[in-house]
Image 1 (cartoon, rainbow, N blue to C red):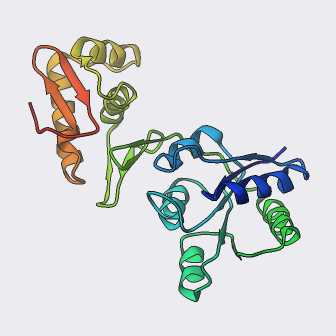
Image 2: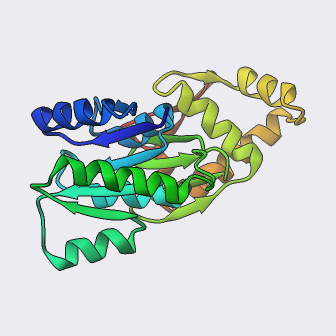
Image 3: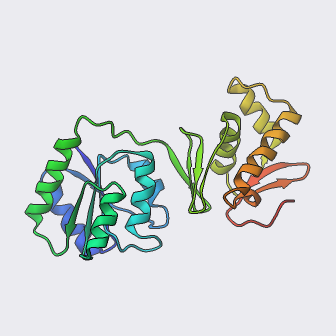
Length: 231
């Protein structure tokens, strides 16, 4: 059974589309939090995405750009906007098709089926992604991306960042970080950890996120959602 992610904020339309697609044995998921689309996308690991352009928080173009940067999963836009520039934008961002509202459900189903057949042999594995402070953190590629730009981290730096993000707004002790890095077959001394955190911050500064990693003197470090400056 193919898993489809329908990113649509019109509740009535969402349930109608879901009911129609479910009749064809598709497993259809929706979004519960439109500020965390990429995280729900990563958790669901769909085989195809159907996305509207006009959405809360960020538009469909924004999410399409992020998804396409990390996955070749098929994407179909479904929108009431019919201006040629919207269609061109969608295709340039890597969409596989564009369906204009209002539409006939048979057309939507046919396009979904055709798209899945066309990409069936493609690799649609979704890379593990995490959202933090408006940025997308790609744990597999060691890359952090936001609207300002993109940075590439070393294995140690992404390991430290992942530990801090997974426990964001909580202090992670230096001992816990060092022990975890040791368990991961990377020898890290107290001084080496300091160097790695400083380098991590310097790189994060390039995209405006350096101050979101705070030092808690005598305790450890903490990844926050609201920066208060270096401690």
